Amino acid sequence: MKIEVLYFAWVRERIGEPRETLETEAATVMDLVEELRAREPRYDLAFSDLKSLRVALDQELTEFDASLDGVREVAFFPPMTGG
Amino acid sequence: MKIEVLYFAWVRERIGEPRETLETEAATVMDLVEELRAREPRYDLAFSDLKSLRVALDQELTEFDASLDGVREVAFFPPMTGG
Amino acid sequence: MQVTVQSEDFDLAQVLKGFGKAPNTGATVSFTGRVRDDSGTLEHMEIEHYPGMCEATITKIAEEAATRWSLTDCLVIHRYGNLRPGDQIMMVATAARHRVEAFEAAEYLMDYLKSRAPFWKKEVTREGADWVAAKDADEEALNRW
Amino acid sequence: MQVTVQSEDFDLAQVLKGFGKAPNTGATVSFTGRVRDDSGTLEHMEIEHYPGMCEATITKIAEEAATRWSLTDCLVIHRYGNLRPGDQIMMVATAARHRVEAFEAAEYLMDYLKSRAPFWKKEVTREGADWVAAKDADEEALNRW
Image (tube, each protein chain N blue to C red):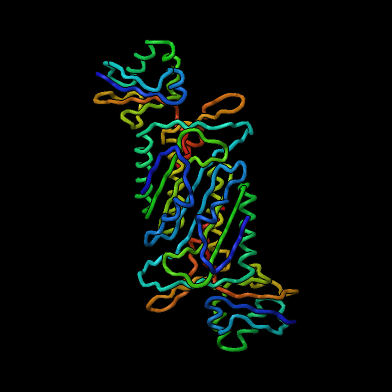
């Protein structure tokens, strides 16, 4: 399946781009993360500490064990600092 | 001694005037209240329930047992409802 | 710090224009109180005040808040006289480094103004007139500080 | 209810002009956040945001506040882009019958915006640039609600 992946803040800086379209068979967010980490060191570095990362599926905050079934947009970013 | 006495809200309405200058030898607020109550029924009515009254001496909130020594202005009023 | 007791209305927009611009102000909070007409019969509200004591009491409350929360700015405007439903009664504004300080100081000001500033409200409705009674809850609100 | 995410500055005075005038609004609270320069070396702050998710998340938070505190009006403006010390970052405003509701709703909005709205701040100083880390205290602040 085709999935849109977005990166924000220092995740974006480590990976070097704000978004990309991926072809993946990953069933969960965690599977996708493992797939990305295996690709290149910059991904491995960006995802090295999952506790300092958040994930949103189709613009809704969720957990790393969430299913990617039917999802079009995944976003990875550090904890938000709004306000 | 001469003392300025002020009344506010329903205390003012019951007594029928906003302020008066009194000649008194009362030592405490309580003494002054007793003196006033003895004067006329309208004062007696206004001061019939001291728990629903507050008193300020020289514009500072205080208690009914406070001394009038050196005080120029006494004010009686119900609990405040500012804001 | 600004403390004003007046019968005229105030323009919140105008008042806030120059407010909270001191260096290192990260948070500004404003509160505005208006006359409500819960019963649907209110013609106007009379606000009686104790000239002199109002200004002195509010200034003292504002100074305490400014010290306790290290405010970078603080402002209180309170009106007296005849007000109609929807009219502005009063406002407070606080400026501080962080949001919690600005919020707490504004709530402190409001809680103390309610029960300690010498104002009295009388509601004049088509059925008659009545002094607004102080609420136990307003007195109890002071216990949190 | 109004939720706006924009790069342009906003005029607090202008925004509050029409706010909180619904019948039976007794209390209006506004909060404004500005860029502080604690170190004295801040050149600017970059606010990155997630377009779409920002609006959706803030709208959801505002709707929850509006329901929980029976707000008569509610407004959030949040900026993104490059801001300088003293610049306004964001504001919230709440209107309700009583003061406690308006204050609580405004604090709720702020607490949730801090930790749930997808914005990220980067401080650019003369010495370099650093992402502002989320504070444990901000996450814990959500527990009171």
